[in-house]
Image 1 (cartoon, each protein chain N blue to C red):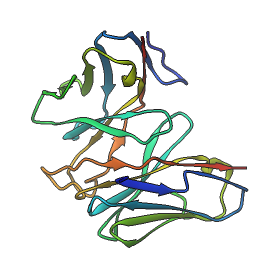
Image 2 (cartoon, each protein chain N blue to C red):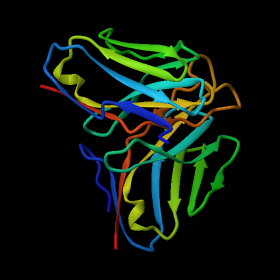
Image 3 (cartoon, chains in turn brown, cyan):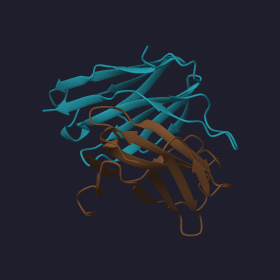
Length: 115
Length: 117
C-alpha cells in the first residue's frame, strides 16, 4: 500500500512480484531524468536514466517510462527481489541557463520486498 | 577501490564548533557536488564545482564554505554549527557539468552523518 504526508510513500511487495514506483516532476523544461536507489546507510546509486526525447527505456529488470504530457515518471522493477528493498528517488534536470548539472530530487519512495 | 569517498563517516559535535568534511573522487571527473539529506530523506543540492570553479551555489548560509584544492577533491567547511545542520551530507561527482545534450550521471559517496548537539 501507499501512504503520504509526513512520511515517505511506501510500497510493499512480495518477492517475485513486479513493482511500479511513480514520480511526478515539476519542471516542464526538464529534459533529463534519473532514478536512484538508496539503501540504508549508503549513498544514492544510479539505476537508469532517460532523456526527454524518449518515452521508455529498459535496463536489466528495470524499465523507466516518461510521460511528458502529465509530467510523470515511473520505474518498473520486474521480479522484485529482497535486495531491491531501498528508498527510490527520481531526479530531474535540464540543460538550460546556469542550471546544468543541478539535479532536483523527488520525495523518495520506500520499497519493501517480503520474501 | 571506492570511487567517491568521504571522511569522516560520522561526526558528532557541539553547537558553535567549526568542522570540515572531506571528499575525494578517483573517477577522473571534472565536476563535484555537495548535497544535504534531511531527516525526511529529502536530498537537496548545496554546491557544485567544475575544475575547481564554483558553478552552483544554492541558497545556503554563508557558514558553509566549499573548497576545491584540485578537481579530485571538494571539501566542505562549516562554521558555527547549529542544531539544524544535523543531516547526512553527500558528495557526488560527474564527468562533466551537464551541457546541453550531454547530461552526466552523478555518482554519490557514502555520506557523512553529522549530528550537532
